[in-house]
Length: 255
Ligand code: MN
Image (cartoon, helix red, strand yellow):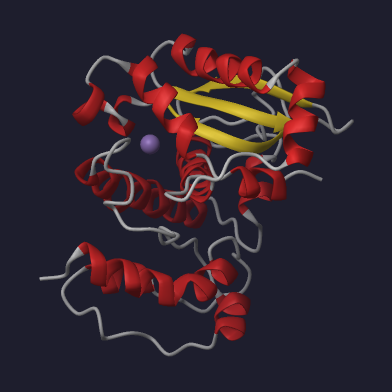
């Protein structure tokens, strides 16, 4: 039986490797999903591929490991939601993206290059979006929230009036999204920040987006992200999830 704790420590050991491979798609040699093999029954049976070599030869996208355990947010997202969301939903998007890329004979591109293509086949739009969006979502959450740095708070006050106004606008964007989708904070070409929302697994990198931009924060508002704990109360989920944002990570995505 693999516990959350051992699973997470396996994840942590793999972070460097996956950081180097998850967004890399160049080359032709197969690199198996180390996370998945360790998630199943034999956590110690691991590949011994050097990170650099693996990054250079990865042919498909790999589910990024969580930088914390499934039980990291007991007051905000229950462990079962976390586990299903990461190991089933995100894994599913990853697998289907890889299949769709193979089908379309697309290789050697980063996920960002793929999502900004002029014409995205539907399967790549949906599953590539799902892969990218969830990778960002996990990355900008933290169980050790310490608030915004003064630099980020100043920037947000400049662009939104106040930190409170910014958080309200973000929560409102998520609450008003009809059906499934995402709420985003993006940076424009002129460095200004804006908040928007996209349907389904679209995101602001895509040319189909109503408002394009570089995502620095994304919140999943699909029911699968919150329904076990919050049922129909998406607003409560949004209020709570904004409290576990890793603001330093968000700031590090700004140019
Ligand atoms: Mn999701």
